[in-house]
Length: 303
Ligand SMILES: Nc1ncnc2c1ncn2[C@@H]1O[C@H](COP(=O)(O)OP(=O)(O)O)[C@@H](O)[C@H]1O
Ligand SMILES: [Mg+2]
Image 1 (cartoon, helix red, strand yellow):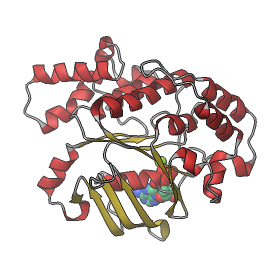
Image 2 (cartoon, protein in one colour):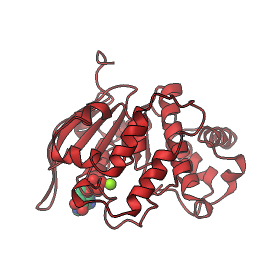
Image 3 (tube, protein in one colour):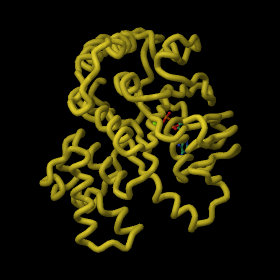
C-alpha cells in the first residue's frame, strides 16, 4: 500500500472565509483502498476539506492532488472526467425530492454516460440491492424514506458510476443504532469487495473503531494527529484526548478491543451505540465531550 502513490494528497492547504481562517496548514495523504476518517470539533473545517477534495471549493493556498491530478490546474474537460471517478455522499443526503429514488440513482448515469434508459434502470436496481434497499424503494420519493433508507439511497447514488473513490460526510449521523451498525458493515464491505478508497467524516466512535484504518484529527486549522484509532488512543494532544476520554469514548474503545470478531454480513452488535446513547443522555463533562454535530443542523438522534 505504501509503495503506490497516494490517492489523495494535500500539501500546505490554507483556507479562509473572509477574515475567518479555517485551515492554516493541512498536510495529509490517503492511500489506495484505505478507509480514512477525518474527525475534529464542529467548525474545524472537515466538510470544507472534503469539498476541496471534490472540486467544490478551492483552497486559498497549498495544493490538492486527487488520483494523480493537481486540482488547481484541471481544465473543464479533465475536471468532468475526474468527477466520474469519485462518488460523494453529502451530509444531508442531497437527493432530489421530486425524483424517485431510482431516478436519483440513475441521474449520474444519465448525465455522464450514453447508456440506454433500460440499462440505467438495471444498474440503478443493482445499486439499490447493493446498499441493502428493497426493490420497491426505488419507486418511492426521498421525503417518504426513513433516515437510514435515505443514507443508503444517497450511497447508492454515490456508487452509480462505480467510483474508485468514495467520500462520506457523516454517514451515520442521526441514525438509530441498528441502522448505523448496518452502515458500518456496508462501508467495510465496499472496501473489501470493491477495493474502494473511502474518505469519511464522522464523529461516530463505533464507525471509527470498527471501520477506519487511519484517522486524522483536525484542530486549530491543522492535522494535529494521524494514525489508527489504537495509536490515537495513546496520543496526548487535547483535541485527541477530548475524543477518547469521555464515557462514549471509553465504551466504544472497550467494545472495539473485545476479541470477538463480528461476522461481516451481519449488522455489528449495537450495544456500544446503546451505551453511547445512555452516556449521552446524561450531560457529559465539557472537556470530555466529543465534538457536537455542526451548528445549524437539525438535532440528530444521539449516537
Ligand atoms: N461557504 C462558506 N462561507 C463562509 N464560511 C464558511 C463557508 N463554509 C464553511 N464556513 C465556515 O468554515 C468553518 C468550517 O466549516 P465546516 O468545514 O463546515 O466545519 P465542520 O464540517 O468541521 O463542522 C465554519 O466556521 C463555517 O462556518
Ligand atoms: Mg461538516
